[in-house]
Image (cartoon, rainbow, N blue to C red; front, side):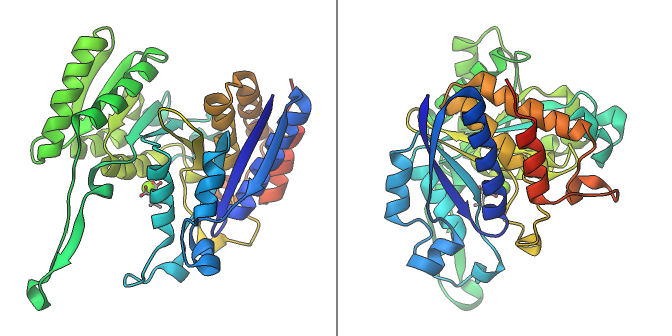
Length: 357
Ligand code: IPM
Ligand code: MG
């Protein structure tokens, strides 16, 4: 197989972790006889610094013609001024929208070796294996916004908008994912307050009844879901929700396995390249220190192989290698719980060494 992969290292720890994931993909190419070509492009704060634009046209063009995209992270205090003309995050939102990446898959899976890294008790966390599908190109993130008035009367608005078609396509994808897992789907909304959530709930119920009567389906309000994730995380299989609720709930859920540093995500559209990234951000406080955990990005590379290149065996080879590294007791600082920790590159080395057929 030949595949062209665009790297978008971005800001903070982005370049360090993307580099390790690239090395792992190169090793996979060697071992399985594939030819991967890589090209790096600008996004985020570094793109603002160099071009004035968090998502230069050149980057969009490169992404469109790639087979898949691997992104590090964007943002940092340097670009945080609320009155700035543009922000690194705008680049990320725009690439999602430009490429039509409406479905964000965020698996929350517990590595058996890390159960004790979870802030929750073992008996609560054990067995947790959730796949979140977050709608990624609609909702309040992309609703019309503006300011008017002045002084104490100045107001700001941002609209939450969902169409029937947007809800149908993400619910369908989530239901299909459930069929390949434990056949259970939970839809999360705020239908007791928000009109877009009422539309969401109606459409989801219809899609499930008409097209997926075999999938066990229920609905939960977002505030209750925040609670259930802490109290009984092992009860959920696939969870589908809107853009903002998904943003918040997946950060909460990402703490269940103990560290944000372990969790990958995939953003997919109906066609074209998928975009793969760690769930965590750019961690500017530890950038450049070579202590960041590259495993989330390495696991994102596994998702890239699985979803964009149909290379399931190769994806499993990466996930198996990561499992072996953890079983061997190797830990970066975020998952070391005070015991001895290795650096970013050493963790990359450890995974590379364990990639095999
Ligand atoms: C995420 C991030 C982004 C989001 C930010 C960086 C724009 O938090 O991918 O979850 O809110 O979608
Ligand atoms: Mg987020």
